[in-house]
Image 1 (cartoon, rainbow, N blue to C red):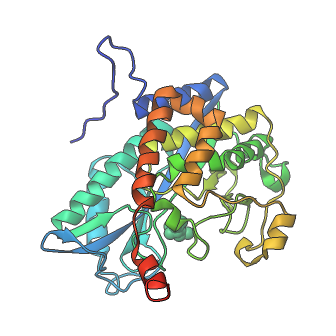
Image 2: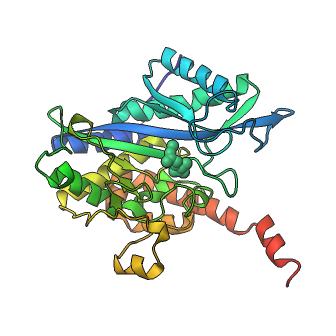
Length: 353
Ligand code: GLU
Ligand code: MG
């Protein structure tokens, strides 16, 4: 069983610091403009072995993308997770091994935003519990292992107007509506400002580096997978945009609220997303990227917090209470990290200097 709650003040009014309420406010903001949001997340995670009850970063399989048994020894656990999710009312669309050893992905049906956020919370709880029952540790930490893929939570999103897909236009460029292009424009414009919410850990920024299928450049594409926003090939009712930077350590209520409000700001301000970039941006030279005016995501949590602090739309989305407390708590987390001396620094500097 599960109980999902909203937090209220003693006088019954909604508590400003309640993330679920924050998402409800963003959904109401969309509804005022005639839109409903549908969301499908793709949460990735690792299954690690435990030693004397403590998690390690050792995996138990040698599997890769879409591998099946006997290579993928996590398949049994993954199947059990799917069965529990189905008992809890999830419609699981896909469950497969991901690129890294011990890494998995489970996708569930596109649903209205609030239901999806509830689902992501329940999902993480189920995954961790079923793993533990099998003597494994499941983690949604974005980048647990250096040099291999990290775990993302690509978020597929669509706006509906009176129940119909508002992103599809058979006569539009790439068969996309103006609404869709402006929504993409909003996601790109606010990408830096919302990143601290969608990627909230010091460790989140270790995933957002070139070479491991995670995005770093703020562009969109209707073909290539390296950009931040991808429009998958399906059209008609299945027309959707995929934002690729979020990771599964985020608070799903806040993350969906900031994505929705970023997109809606694109609609309101009629933000042109610019032309799609269908080349692999990672192989472009710095000069070529500068010529195309390609901006980058924040490189650290600290940069992301600075960008959040400057973004008025994000501030309005979160409300003053969450905005101030989030910034303060995360600045403290950043300083905690910054004063550490890492193994990398010792290895690189100790003998030379
Ligand atoms: N794990 C990759 C990431 O960090 C994504 C792999 C994929 O395309 O599903 O975003
Ligand atoms: Mg994936």
